[in-house]
Amino acid sequence: EAQLVLSTLLKQLEKAEAAGDAVGVEVVWYAFQGIAEVIADEPNVPDAFHSVLRSVVKVGAAPVEVSSTGAALLRACGPHYEKDLQAHLAPAVQWLMTMVTHIPVDASETVQELCGYAGKLLLPFVEEFLKVVSEVAPKAPSEVDAALHGALLGITR
Image (tube, rainbow, N blue to C red; front, side, top):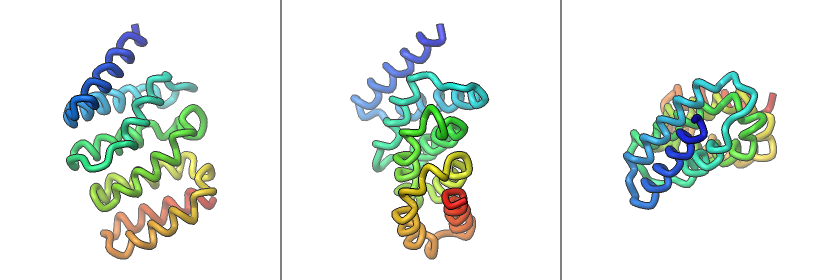
């Protein structure tokens, strides 16, 4: 029955994306965020998460609420980036870094948390990350600056 729920949600996501329905996409992301929170301690995540995470990182301009929900979903998946969702870690952090000017606190705090879970896997991207941090941090509020620098520590420790 769980597979039926997941496949129904994925179909709704596909429909919403095809229709350009940002609210519909957000609703599905929110549902997957809840599922991710429930399975945080599970050893594996359902395969459906691969499609959902790809849908988040391909979103460019979206309303703040939609982008924040995407960040919350990425954050809820945090415990799984070191293993099952490893292929999605770099794209998630790259997307979040592009969102720092749009959703500064949500994006920076999510990056920091993801780097706390699996930052060592981002070491090949540290130069790119540092460049973005050095461009964004001086103009950002102090909590954003602190979170981005904390994320750097998570990568290099």
